[in-house]
Image 1 (cartoon, rainbow, N blue to C red):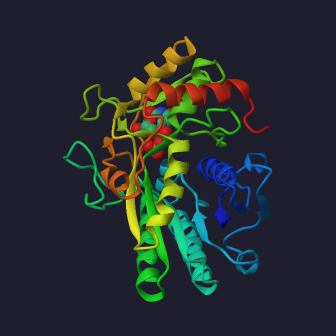
Image 2 (spheres, helix red, strand yellow):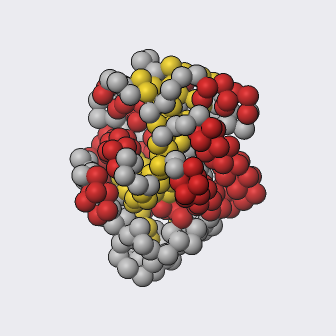
Length: 327
Ligand code: UDP
């Protein structure tokens, strides 16, 4: 049995990872300030510690509590749009907390560090999909803040031998297929849950952020990857870290436009998605689609839920069952 610390384990992707670790029989400690996470998203088998990464005493206390086989770092501000209104907050909080955590991990000889990073560190590309070798040019302050942590991890490996995996997610979506966990952001800003809410009449309509992009239907194209496939990838990379630090893209490799997502939600629920066209959102590249060949080749990862409709069905099932999210 291995023992892991998960920062942000009460959040969307983190909570799905915690459940997967527990199902493997691992011991899990969740460290989360519950600012955006939910206590009831933390599966009962995990130990929960309420604390903030910006609090050095709390951080030291949790890391000093026993021996660790690895650490998964999810806790962060994560909204592209917000980061373009408050860039300095994103840079100082996300990067500052990340640096403090890396230092603490080195101090306590944590052997492996897995970072929840983002495709937003890449700018737009001319190629159909983005490989790990694509030019890094963060499109938002959020992406920049993750890039800064990635750079710090490089130095932590070089100088202290801390092995790390930077997992650059494309668009996390869906929910636990058994309906135990789902997506509940407050306020919700993500496309799929908002489209579901619009179809169910919980919000009057969805605003499409721009239909004048250089894409086939004019709306932005993203790569939606199932949250359980992301969780699975976190576990698969652990073994790789015995050899070297890695950076991997994590996506389905298929791009879907905002309009295609709305069609999928409408088909899943059997209802129209009321929508209007609004202005572009700052920080949004027109197209972000992953080439995830590296993690497939090196860690044997492949998405189990690659079909957009299946991803939307899982998200819709959870939202229908939990109209008030985690309550
Ligand atoms: N989007 C939109 N309307 C919304 C929310 C999102 O048109 O109310 C678009 C957004 O511009 C992007 C895509 O949907 O092209 C996915 O956005 P989301 O916020 O879900 O994820 P992000 O790409 O920011 O990680």
